[in-house]
Length: 143
Image 1: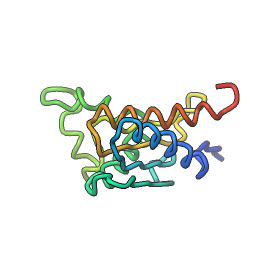
Image 2: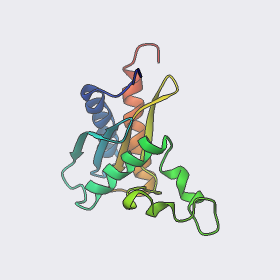
Image 3: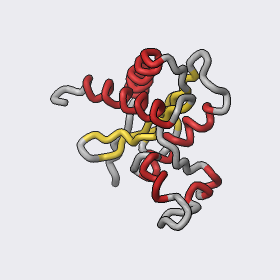
Image 4: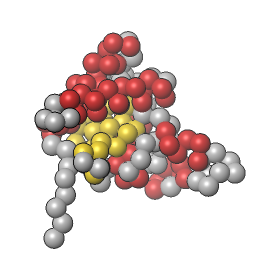
């Protein structure tokens, strides 16, 4: 029998709130997706003004980060022509994203879920995603 650690709905709401605060601070309305450790959606928010196309992109960034257990940004260089993961963006029905903004959530070295942000530049998306994770971790005793 397996024991699986995963984000709760409350955790997802805290991740969204932390990331949303950063998005408001930088003036970029975001689409925010939170998944469990297997990439299944727990919560989603499209801030007023978040791009319509970014609703799916944010979800796919979180899906990628959870399933691959790595940041979407880490695929960027490796997926360029001539590199070891070239063409990986077409894997799993095109859901695997190679643009910054998807980050796994790690607790005690285990991936318990992931965040995906989209609507800004890749750097802004990643900044907001990390802010959400930082907000969640700050609420966990001993962190």
